[in-house]
Each structure stands twice: as structure tokens, then as C-alpha cells.
Length: 452
Image (cartoon, rainbow, N blue to C red; front, side, top):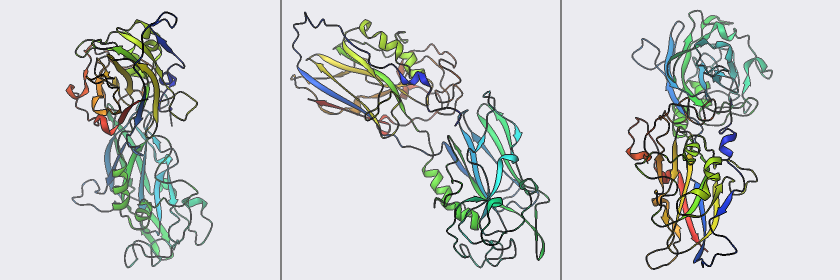
């Protein structure tokens, strides 16, 4: 992976807390103690983008790419993502072409999109699921078998074909004599991918020369290591076998589609207890105060707002939240993890907080601008799920780009505070028409308040 999910700025500061009351002189009686849990309930998606390629250029229906034909498809990818794909070398039992462990990087080390022949990053693999026979000759090779999924089960591991030593081994041509893979940058974050079966793609067999087509396949855009298979380990059972043995993309295509989408962490943030009727952190429809919301909304950096807690309107107490429950180190909350904090409050107090919706440019998670009332009209402390009082806000400080893809989104930017200044007011994200799709709040965050 080119960079971690967050840079150091997203870690925030440790141990900042304050109060406007002097402990030695205060005669205020608190009315209750509260514990707040902010849990990330978003799905943890394995793939950012995925799809099937199954119709050669110029053909009117799905089918293999025979010598001289190619598959083409476009992908959108950010600087921290790579491309992986799987396509069968037809006429074999379970051989397939795919990139190696890291996938194919679509940006160079300087963050520039590439246009290049990347065939040297593609390898011929043995899926280890079916015993090999002589290509195009064996009775269970894909061109000769009586039906799909025939042949003797191998129960082996995914290996480079060049590393296979057990059973029958055959002299396959070099990869670049069968397949050509190229990446062409189109514009913005879009790339055209071409996977061509070369005009001279042939296999030498005991029965003479046979053509070597490519099957339909599946592609994914991902962060980190290649998530489709692991060299030296058995097939994951998600559909590689179906492609490698039969050129059937159904299972892997279904699996990747079900696990595709943006994963949304939440950054460290700041919480405050403020008096009713005050707007301590921001005001809807008004430009950001400049107290530190921008740094959280764009970079997950709590330093500025944390240092300004004492100066915020109506604030009685507050602190930075930056260490997930069960962790010893500051960091974002990924799906399945949470922040938790406890405080005292009295009737008339509200709770306000902000965290960055990571993978975006300047979207933050927060309460309304006046916060959540901690006591009902009868003076009883509230307790329960308050997610319906949590919103996604656009800070209006940086122009939005596609989440997790745009070059200045927090997971892709080259440094803190990049991106085009926007100079707009803070507003609900649901009121922003930027052309991008966002999840609903309750599919990402769950917030509960417990009166102790």
C-alpha cells in the first residue's frame, strides 16, 4: 500500500481536556454523569471498484478473446489504490493470468497517473484446484472437457506456474508472448485498461500447435495487497476456481460486487458540553468559524480545535477523542470500533461533537449546531440511541471530489490541507449537490448516550 489509511495528522492530540469552571470556586451542582459511545458500523469493503469483462472489442456478445482480440474496460482509482484482475488461459485445466501480490499501481511514485504497458507485472498462475494435464490435449482441459468442473481435484495452493513441480509440468510460452496488458490514463482519475490476446498466442503440444485464448474475467480496484488470492495458499473459494477451470466469472463477479464500495473510517474528533442555545463548533448556513473544524473535516487533525476548547461559545467542558476503545494508541475508528468518553452535565446542557467522515475532502460527522439536549423537558437525563440526531455536514472549506478516489480526499492527498478552497457555508451534506453518492448516517455511525 502506498500509504496508510490516515497520515499522522489524523491521530490528533492525546489528553487534552478542559473546563471553564474553577474547581476551587464553582458552586454548581451537576445533575448527571453521561457516557457517550460513537461506534463505526459501516461495512468493511474489500474492493473500492469491481466489474466483469466478458465481451471482446468488436464482438456483439460475451465470449473468449481469441488471438488478436482484446477486452477493454475503464476504472476510476485514487493514488492509494491498485488494479488486480483474473482471466483464464484457456486450453488448460486451471491456469490463469493475474498481477502479483500488490496489484498494478496506476500512479507513479510521484503521484502521477500512468500510461504504460504493464505486461511485465502480469504472471501465469496455477490455481491448484485441478490436476494439470497437457494443455489443449488432456481430456479435462477446458477445450476438451465434457462439462464444467470436471477433472481430478488437486487441493493444492495458488502458485506461479513456473514454480509448479508436482505432477505434470509443461513448457508454457513467456507471458508476453500470449497476453498484453496496458493502462492508459484518460482524464482525472479514470484509466482505460486493455487486456489483449496476442495474434500469435499459441501453445506447443504433442498434437501440434494450438491457439491460446483468454477467458472473460473479473477486475477489482483495491488498497493493500491483492485481495483475490494469496500466493502459496489455497484458493479462497470465492470464484477463482470457476474462472481458472472454466472461464466462468459468475461466482467471483457476484462476490466482488457484494464486497465493493467505499469503507468509511471516522477520524479523531472533539466533544464539548455547551449551554443550551449556543453554537460552539459551527453554525449551519454560516462560514466555518476558523477555530479548527476545517482541520478536522479535511485532515482529521484535532490539534487546532482541541487547543481552542476554552474559547468556544458556551462551552462548559470538552476534550479530544482519539483513542479507539481497546486500543493503546490514537487513531481513527474503523468499522467495528468505537470512541467512548464520560462527562458530567446539568440541566440546560447540550452535547456537541465533530469527527471527520474519512475518505472525503471536508465532510464531518456531528450533532446539530446547538448539540443534543442532555435532559428532557422534565429534567430527566436522556439515555439511549441518539443516532437520529447525528448528521453529515459539508464544512464548505474544500471542493468535494469522489470519496476515496479524488486526489485530495484524505486517503489520497499528498499532504495535509491540499485541495481547492471552497469558501462556502457549513451545510448539511444532504443539501449539497456535488454529483457524488454518500451513505446514510445510520449505515456508518451509531451514537448512544448512557446516563450513569
